[in-house]
Length: 196
Figure 1 (cartoon, rainbow, N blue to C red):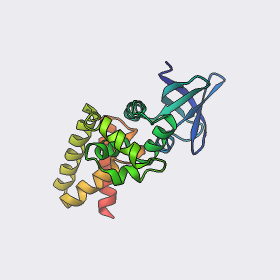
Figure 2: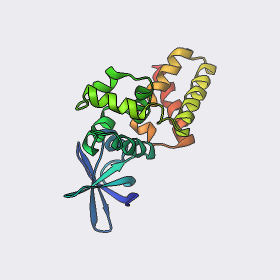
Figure 3: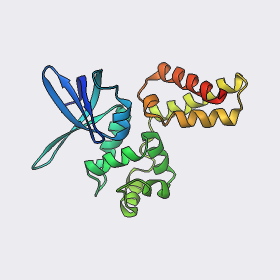
Figure 4: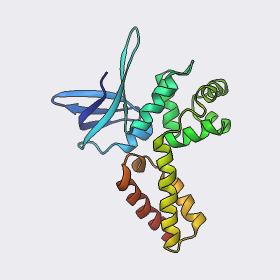
């Protein structure tokens, strides 16, 4: 399996991204959130991948985060969900929001995703509900709580701070960051937002 592709971002389109490595350009199909999270054309990047093999085609899918790839692979285990639909689902909802929607059986939110019908949404909920919470999700909850508490200690309204942090955690440019860097960026942007 091709685990990742490292190189220069050569193009971005609504459906895919190109990564050039030593004279070879890889065309990776990707969700809109991955495309948004990756750096601009000409920048160096590492894109996680999944090679999807069928009888008559080989398609390489790209992901900005390990969490998105994990969700993509989980969605593929559901009967009636192929890679194209899995990509649409991940374009319509962030990984953390999708996990929440599945765990709370939020059918209206799931059915609002373009191309996802009610029956398939129900199948996804039945098969994946409660199975997608990971250590990363728990860390994100703890991180949100910590940043919200810091903002409240600075004198910002606690409810407004929690809401601002929650919105920022959905932002692909934030989810692409890791650990301490992500926490600092959330805090910085939340301060800007709450001060305006």
